[in-house]
Amino acid sequence: MSKISAAITCVGGYVPEYRLTNSILETMVDTNDEWIRTRTGISERRILKGEGLGSSDMGVEAVKDIFRKSNVKPEEIECLICATVTPDMMFPATANIICDKAGIPNAFSYDIEAACSGFLYALTTGAALIESGRYKKVIVVGVDKMSSIIDYTDRATCIIFGDGAGALLLEANDEGYGIQDSLLKSDGSGRKYLHMKAGGSVKPATAETVAAKEHFVYQEGQAVFKFAVKGMADVSFELMQRNNLTADDIAWLVPHQANLRIIEATANRMNLPNEKVMINIQKYGNTTGGTLPLCLWDWEKQLKKGDNLILAAFGGGFTWGATWIKWAYNG
Ligand code: UT7
Image (cartoon, rainbow, N blue to C red; front, side):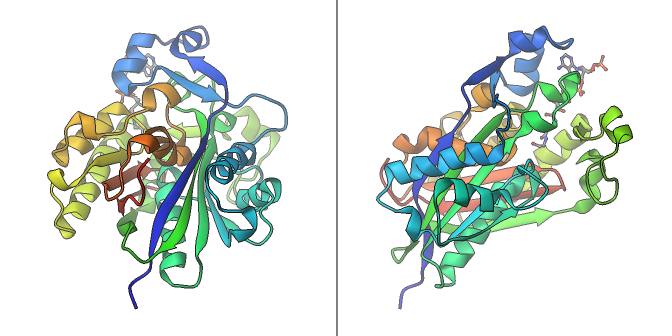
C-alpha cells in the first residue's frame, strides 16, 4: 500500500476592504511613509471594521471561498484547525465558531496558538491527521484581527500589523503530493520580547490593566528582529539540507510577512533569487496567522503541479519553523 500524504487541493482567502495606508498612519502617530517602507516594506494593511465582527468572520469568508472553488461539500470536512492569536473569545475555540458559521456540521475543530508560526503548526498537525490514514479532508485556517490587540498610539507596533484570513483544504493523496517534511521549533524563554501583558490567568483583566494598555501587543522590535532573521533562515536552510534540496529544486519560498528585511535574509541564506520569493507584505502588513495562506491565495494561479515550496515563519513564543510542500495542481 502506498504512503498517504496530505495534498493541498484548494486555497481560500479573505481580506477586509478598508485600507489603512501609511499616509493615514502619518496623521495618527509620529511616523512617515519613507520610514515604514524602508524599515518594513509595508505600504498599507487591511483593517476589519464593523461592530461585533471578529476573526471568525474573516475565517468563515476564507473557508467559503474554498467551497466556492472546489467540489468539496461542507458535510465532507472531518476536522478544521484554526491558527490565531486573536480568537473571537478566550473560549470557545474560534475554529468551533467558524464551523458553525460556515455550516460545517460533521467536523471536530480546535485552535492552535503559536503566534506568527501558528499556521505552520496547524498545517503540520492537519497533515499528520491525514497521513495517519484516519481522516481524508481537513481544513486549516490562519486568521488574525491584529487591529483588535494593537495600540494605535504606539508607532513601533501599529505600522506593522493588519487583518486577514487564509484557508487550505488538505486531502489524502497517494501520489506523493503535499506536505513532505516540517521542522518546527519553539523556545518559551523568548516570551519576554513579544507578548501581551494582561488578560491571561497570570494577570486577568482589570480596570488597571486596561488603563495601563496591557491588552495590546508588547514587542521589543530589535531583539525580535535579530532572533527572527537567524531563526527563519537557519530552519529553512536545515530543512533543505536534510532533504538534499538545492536552490534550483525550489520553485517558491513562502515566507511569513513580518518584515521585508527578514524575508530577504532568509532568501539569501537559501540562495534564492527574488523572483522565487512570495512577497505581499506591502499590501497586507503582518497578518500573523494569515500571512502564509494569503501568499498562497495571491500566487495560486502561478503554481504548478510538482512545484517545491518552502514555507517559513518566525514569531512570538518564540516559535519558528519551515515546511516543504510538493504542490498538487496547476493553478
Ligand atoms: O511577526 C512576529 C515577529 N515580529 C517581527 O519579526 C518584527 C521584528 N522587528 C522588526 O521588524 C523591526 O524591529 C521593527 C520594524 C519593529 C522596527 O524597526 P527597527 O529598524 O528595528 O527600528 P528600531 O526599533 O531600532 O527604531 C529605530 C528608530 C528609533 O528612533 P531612535 O531611537 O533611533 O531615535 C525609533 O524610535 O526609529 C524610531 N521609530 C520610528 N520612526 C518613525 C520606531 N518606529 C517608528 C515609526 N516611524 N513607526
